[in-house]
Each structure stands twice: as structure tokens, then as C-alpha cells.
Length: 247
Image 1 (spheres, rainbow, N blue to C red):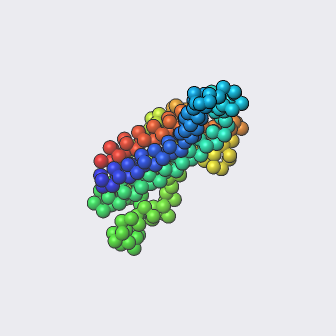
Image 2 (cartoon, helix red, strand yellow):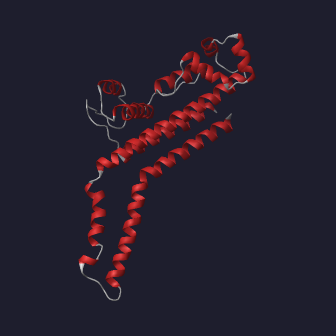
Image 3 (tube, rainbow, N blue to C red):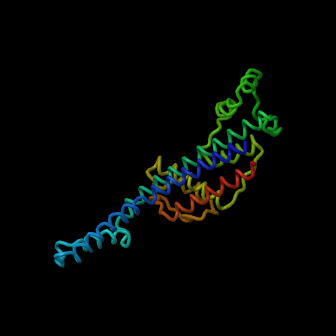
């Protein structure tokens, strides 16, 4: 099981890296364009013949590109991209936590290590027990069907790990950052990022988060690069600590 969990975590880290590349893609393009414009400008100014007429030089284009970051003139457009990056982060986290749960559940069942409380809650029929004994992967599918198990809600994740695996997840700041990310992901996907009453109510209970500590009704939730860094760090640390606990 240890090797499987390490592989799952490595895959998650790679997925996070891919989101990071997407977040930083605009900077790569900007640096590329500025590098070649400045190089062209230098050649025009120092070549033979030397060109000093601003009309033929790239000075204005360079200043305009450099001003995009300084003046934050594309902030609204960037925020749309960053919000979608937040959606991606939560999706990767959800799929990874589900894989970890399935792996540990299968291992515990196959090795008769399921907590007694879990056995009492699962309550399989004789036919289902026979099916699961032949294919332990079916156990999670049965839980999803019988217990409405879902990983789309972080509170359900916490309960599932505790109820079925006997694993208690620490409630700390990184977990609150992840909870908030889940709430924002739902808002971005279903409400075009506009804060509604349900979102405000749910966020009021996430008091220990490190980002966007104040949110208001009808506010458009817009993520920044630095806020995404907080979310990424919290998710990576959460996974690392969870893997260590399971091993």
C-alpha cells in the first residue's frame, strides 16, 4: 500500500505543477516577447545604419507590455484565468483524496484491518460480502451507492476517513484553506463567482483560513496568484501529512 500511496501523491504533485505552469504561462509569454523586442530594438539602435527615429523603434511597444504588470490593466481578465485554476486545483485534490481513500479501504478490508466501527456502518449483505471478497475494489462503489459517499465536500471527506478508515484528519488552518477553496470552486462553477447567502454562511464557519478573510454578499470572488499559492501549499501539505499518517 505504501508504494501505491506514494505514487498517488507524486501524481498529485505533478498535477499541481501543471496548474502552476498554467498560472505562470502569461509571464513566460510576456518575458519571451519582451526579450525579442528589446533585442530587436538594440539591433536597430546599434546597427548600421543606426536608427533613432521612435517611429521605427519598439520602445513604445516595450513600455506598453511592461506597463501591463505595473498598472494591473488586465487584472479582471487574469482573475478569470486564476479562478479556473482554482477549479482545477480542487478537482485534482478531490480525485486524489478519492484514490487514497479507495486504496486504504481496499487494503484494510483485504487484510482484515477495517475498524470495528467501520464494519458496523458498512453493513453488507451476504451476497455483497461475497462480491467484495472476490473484488475488493467493489467496496468503495457499494459505499457510494449505499451511503451516498461523496468527495465533492470536504466535510464528507473528513467523515468518510474517520467513519470508514478510522483516520482522524486534523482541523487546522490548511484544512480551512482547503474548505474555502471547495466553497469557492462551487461558487465559480455554479454561480459565476458571485457570492450568495449560502456561500457567505458557509464561509463564516471557516474562520481560520489565511485568504479572503472577509467576503461580502454579491461580491465577485476573484483569486490572485498569491492566494492560489496559499491554496496549493495547503493542499500539498495536507496530502503529505495524510500519506505519512497512513504509512
